[in-house]
Every structure is written in structure tokens, then in C-alpha cells.
Length: 232
Image (tube, rainbow, N blue to C red; front, side, top):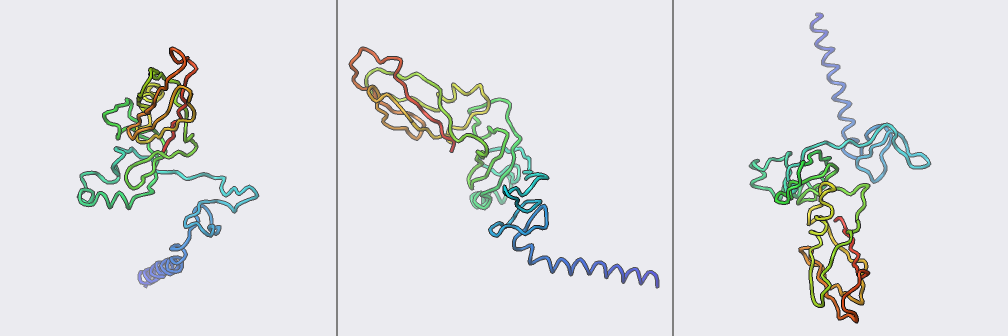
């Protein structure tokens, strides 16, 4: 009788959580708050907070979001999560890439040596977001643009070009991991229009310009161009 009673009691205790879970399911399938039992904000599917918003809209003081720390392998693949040898990846790579858009991680893989021949394997430590095609470094808390230091131009009369990414590489290569060529745009914010005419910036980061006829034998050192590098 004791064994039978224990078995019946055990079934009762197993039955209660199942009932509770069934009642909770509708709530879980809608909007969820993590960190407290406070109602989530109306437009938030997932709301992380440990207290209601105060007068300065502070909603947490016990911690923040801890992203998974991973070692990314290549900017164009979802490794290490989905190996490139995985049969589903081989057969449906484009679909998998598209379906994972918005995936966010904290990368800790920082190659010790910059290698231009392996640009897609070069990473900085920080937050990366999968955009549906490749990993893009998040710009949270970072400047989205910065100036290119002074560089020399050929100022003989006529049409010329200079590769802006090579100038960036030359001047910043000792400061750590560089942005890849396709991570930057370029904007000319000023030039001496009495001497120079900016024609265009090509898809391969070449600045095309023309040196005009000048009233003096050679341009003075005061002739310059301001170029801002914009992080995409």
C-alpha cells in the first residue's frame, strides 16, 4: 500500500506542472519579459528589464545582455555554427544565409598578423551581425566616419588617379586590424578648386581628379584635399 500511495502521489505532482505549463503557453507565445515579472512594453516581443522604467527610463541595474562569445572563421560563412562541409549548407547555402539575417555574436577571434590575401578571415574583437550575406562589424559606440590623414597628390597638369584604400592601409596598418576595402566609403569634403577638380571616386576606391591650368609654375603646399572615410 505504501508503494502504491507513493506512486499515486508522484503522478499527482507530475500532473500539476503539466497543467500549469498549459496555462502559461499562451502567454509565452506572445510577449515575454526576461529579468522580472513586469509586463513587457507594448511593441516588444522580448523585453529585458529588472524594474519598471523610472523618471529617466532606466529599466535595469543588475546586468545587461551577454552575447555568445564565438570564434568567427570567415566573413562569408556561418562557421563555426554551420560547417561548410555540412550537407544542408552545400545544398542550400543561399537560403541558410538569408534565414540567419540579424544573427548577432561577440567575436573573440583576432588573427595575430594582418594578411591581405585572407581579408575575409581578418576580424577585430567585437560585435558582429550577419546581414544575410556576410558578417558585418557593428558600430555601436564607435565613430561611423574618420578623416584620412594628409597624403601626397601628383599635381602636374592633367588627369590623375590615386587609390584611397592604399593610402588608408599605408597610414593605419600599424594601428591594428584594418577595415576591409568593401567596409569603407569615401567622401571628399573639401579641395582647392582653383587648382583641382574632383572627377569621381571609382568602385575600386580610386579617386579621379584633374589638375587645372594654374597661374604659377607649380602648386603651393597649401593645395590639399580633405577625405572622410565612412564605415558602411
